[in-house]
Image: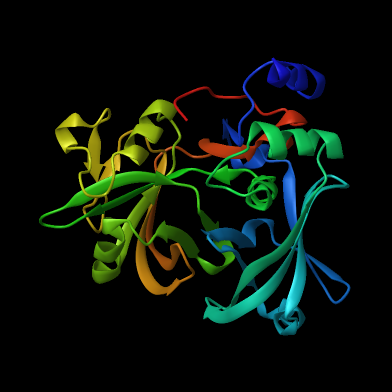
Amino acid sequence: MIGLLIKSLFFEPGAVRTFFVTRLREADIGERVFLESRGACIDVTNRHSMICLDPFCIAVWLPPDQAPALHTQQVNIQFRQEKKCNAEMRVTRIEELPAGNGRLLLYRLESVKNHQLTALHRLALFGYFLRSKTNTYQSRRVISSLYSYPRQIIMVSYQDNDYYNIFPMDIQGYIPEAGLQLLGLRTTNITLDKILAAKKVVICDTDKIDLETVYRLGKHGSKSPTKKQDMPFDISDSEIFGFPVPATAASYKELEIIGHRKMGYHMLLLGKVANQKVITPDAASLYHVGFLQFQKSNYQKIDGLY
């Protein structure tokens, strides 16, 4: 009864959850991400990625002409929509790596501030509706901040003589300027060791795949992947590696793994694009958007098993 009262006071009718799922084209995304350092403000929207959730870590790629930020140990990362700052983070540099013709900076999160809606809205969400025995109040605030920018859900595919797996993930990011794909895979995922040994993997979008299928594939576990004959979609082979690609995909990338680093609960993989196949141009994909951010957006909610 109390929950219904709080919900009616602070939120519109409907489920209250950590994030919603929507289907977007890249041009539909209205949020931007900025790195602030030494008075400079750099747009890193297409140059950043989540890479680990325990501890919370973010990667940012910068070209040589923005090198001054490389030498600042602490920086701020802001998630904005037009002139409004929706969330901001204070992060500390862990390491910098050469990547393409620039540098990849790895940051660990130190503190976070959420600005969406009001302080009472945020308290109701983080302290009441999302309360959990496994996640702290602080971690719920961080997740909300990270998902203030829509996070694309991709499908990952791997295959060898004895094993194959197709599964979804959103701890990832593509940096077009560097031709670099970042993937944050759980260290408990059996497929991870196989990818590292083979140094190759295929990823594709979620253009036409339905949400229930995506989450079902995410729950099967890497020890017992869904058999090919039981997949709810047809499969074709990628051009170079011959890995299975869902027929629902509008595009895919074949990646050569050129580096990796254990960040904590997730392993960061650096993938160089060996081949990119575009089947349907300007296609959409599924995205996760934080609950608070979604409230003021024009994104359309997709319901499903999550």
